[in-house]
Image (cartoon, rainbow, N blue to C red; front, side, top):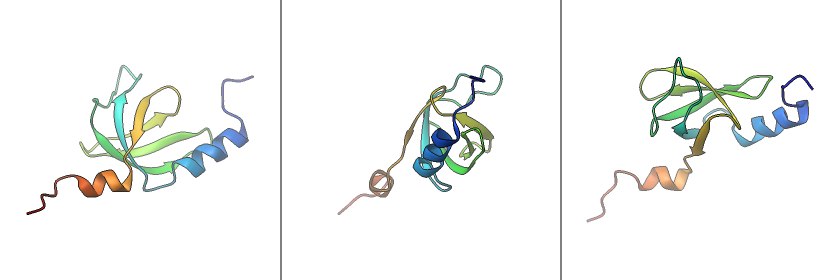
Length: 87
């Protein structure tokens, strides 16, 4: 085993996190370029080793590693409910 995910696992990651998927970071293991908790981003693409390449709201672009970094998907229902006040 070389430490990289299998082709089947990468395909599952690509299906689960297609381009346009919105995520919210909880923690990142990269000590040199971490994205702070709570920052939201959008998946640009998933590479051939299953890394989510994201553009974050703070202007940074960085790869997120599934299973190493902690994040949650922002569901469309959650996004619609934010910032709206019904009168």
